[in-house]
Image 1: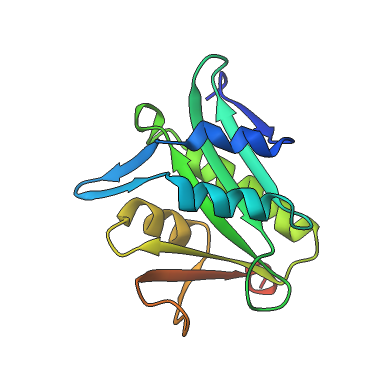
Image 2: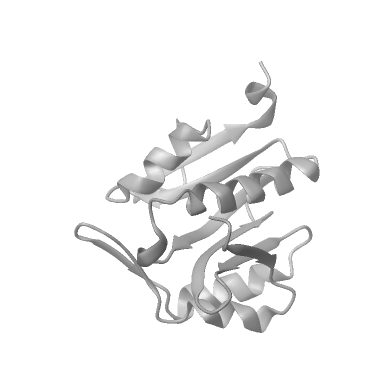
Length: 155
């Protein structure tokens, strides 16, 4: 993974790198289209948001975003994470997600939440590996919600 470079997006226009990209696992396909991009652009300007992109110098490798747009006080939400199909199973998703988690922790957050489709098994496995627990989200039943509480990580 030495040749992968991670950088913070500093311009909202950088989100366009996602347009038309797809994540795929078996029959589960997620494509970045206008509604998702518009939400990412809106949340880009929230206090303490972090949008990371990874490349290998010439091509897109991965993206992960985290922001404070969550209905529980002092929680960050990992909004989106995608690793290009050609770079999966190399630890890149774990690395970029850890960077977002560390960012939230450095901002004094109580924890991090993320949501994923029932069919997105790789994301579910990654969440469990990173210490997230399944959380019964009363506001979203279309998939699985995971929550990571920072005080529990140190016990």
